[in-house]
Length: 304
Image (cartoon, rainbow, N blue to C red; front, side):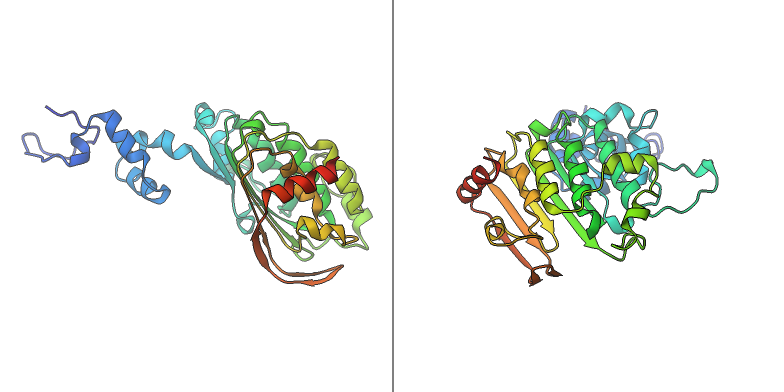
């Protein structure tokens, strides 16, 4: 007699029921089959019944998208707190969908609107503390160009100290830059408005970095080996390819590459750039794969 993990409570007693091929499998074999489903198919399967939901829970939690609801579910006391160690892939929600306050609870009453750029980035980055066994990480955020350097220093400083960093096998970084998203980030008001941020946001960003050379120096000091990293992707508006930095005086974005100079097992680095009109003139969009030998040689020159 086969034991099925699917519910039969809606069947009348004595009603003959033909088990599907999947149901005829032992539970451990059925688990292997379900494990091979694509993410969308796995989600659809989980919605078939409460038993299917529970049966696939650990598989679905291996790949998460950080959203307001997700953060609440995994934080201390959340319904998924006990499952943090099962998460292997984490992806930030699309910046266009960021909540102004990602840890707000509906029962807390009214709240003033806050622009989500810095608070949400800080919250998402610190939420990674929950997941010590991540092997794949996709970070995306939208930031005013004037604080681009501060944001990357803060992001890299946080993730490079994480216990999962040395075991990270895939890392993707998507940065959109804008002068319009946050109205107060303007050159004329930067000094004054920067210090209007809340204390936690100021501590996250650190002291203002006004020139790219200082960003370079800050990131160089932070770089630590990523011995397990094999695949990486960078998508930043207007970023220069590493060899272009040899002749460009500024606006290079070279600091984005520094973490990958210390990844000895890296076999793939894709650079995806949206065109912009930067200090060096207009740049077209392009996507290219870096030559690893050339990248390592260049990294040796830059980092010494």
